[in-house]
Length: 629
Image (cartoon, rainbow, N blue to C red; front, side, top):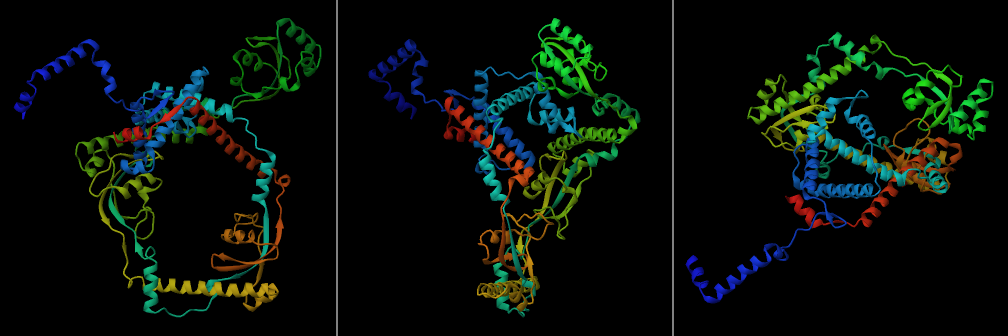
């Protein structure tokens, strides 16, 4: 073959063409032939500028890892069906859109705002206190440096400020809230006769054919779930707690370091009069010393009582330091000397003083001890889980890896998909750990799982060793159950027929009490029910079907509604219109919910408008390629 190619290219014409090609590359360069190459279309472009595909891949991988930590090892194709890649791409597109907008508006977020957002994050707090260990662990789990995370928080704060700028202050039209409130809160009352299925005559014993029909029609009822057995390693605060000693000296050290967190600071109700210069403030102070009224002096300075009382009840940290020191040194009710600040010159007074308090060590000892144990246990649990993971990576069996780290292995004999054993009792090792239960239910047989972290802060490793497939029990084993089901169905049919006959007699004019007496039943007045079955009185059995039927009837009409046991024959007797003025708190809650919904809708529309203005383009084919890679 090679010789044939040499022979075909040995001619003069071919040599001339080859020489021309070489000269052309020498003159124009290879770069000028880029038009022969077809560039890849970016997955996301903002105004023609592509978002780096590496960032999209990295964000997708983070989302994937986060889900796998919570749900166990999930196949990428399954996540594809749920649209994980599209969700990641949409989030990145929105973030870049808002970031570009923030840059154009020169929006800057201070370090103090970022620090406060991080300290307020509930993921980093234990018993309401910021925990540095939890913070570092999250950074490690997500592959973030501290600076990278701070940058992310700064971006989040800027984006939130942009969105809130168009959604804050949203107001719901009063007519809309009024109409919706009246629709939701309208109540109806009826008179009902209960026809219970359980009171119907015994239908007798079913034939073999009847039993077979019931058995075949209720596969789910007569089928045992899949049961799994195996080993579970649980590493959490409760498992670590017994080995943590309580050091009294350490607790007192913690108290000294944290007592300010538990202290109640002094608070004052502060009033301020602002002046543009020291001369005017000094003159005002002289008037006050002579007995002039504080608000009257403020009025002369052109300030309303609302402006004077704008700060209200504050702590020292709520005021600028130039104001805080002199204001919190004042006796109650006495005006201050002029206070010069960068914002102007102020004369202040405190109209009320609430003394601060600082609880003693004994009052806080139990909480300090619990916080100490949880903090230390969290750190030890993480280190222990890492040791087990490293041992597994070295090829050790799960039992050896756990015992080497000082942790016991729990044997699970049989567990169904809901976390219960064959008796229906919950398996304790999976308590408050749905992520670990899901991993156990989905794990392949004979394989040690990777590390599973739960929202509750526990770590798990699981190994499934036996699987008993789901199977339908033989009819001989469920004969009694099937017979009971057949009888229940017959009684339910009889109850419906009886209720329908009762309803016909009432429609034909028979009084309600007389119709009920013929069946040995009683007439009851229903609660005042709303459309969704809610009532103001004590909770009853499911009233949803009865309420729904009442709202389908006209006043005086008769209808049937299903009951927990049988049927209700009901007559609509009363309709009560809702009055927003008589239920102001409920009306305000509805309005607040509507405002939140409208604010969300406005924010989404604003974001869509920004995307259109910045010409955000998402190429689904390119997204698919990134996903596959």
